[in-house]
Length: 96
Image 1 (cartoon, rainbow, N blue to C red):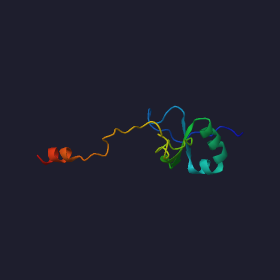
Image 2: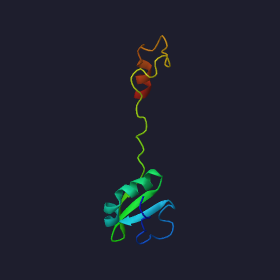
Image 3: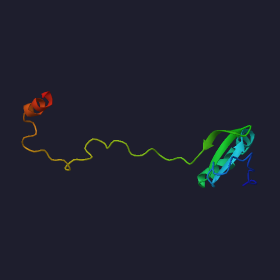
Image 4: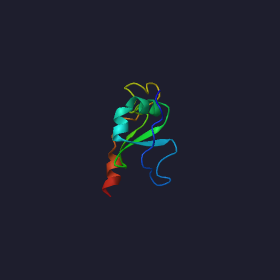
């Protein structure tokens, strides 16, 4: 690989995690492959313009599982015999 990418102007203490490096836009364009290897290794890269952070390169995380597919709970839910009986009592209690 290449030589390590130097950090640009550092941010105040505590503003970046220890595994974060900041590079300027020119460094990011010329050494993108190296930065992507760093990100794959778990490091976060902040890209700055004139020392002002404008973007972050972070590891890809697939979206969490959303709604279960139809039928995923088959056999897990049971209905009582009175499931479809009228609910007049419910609406009477809401009216008072």
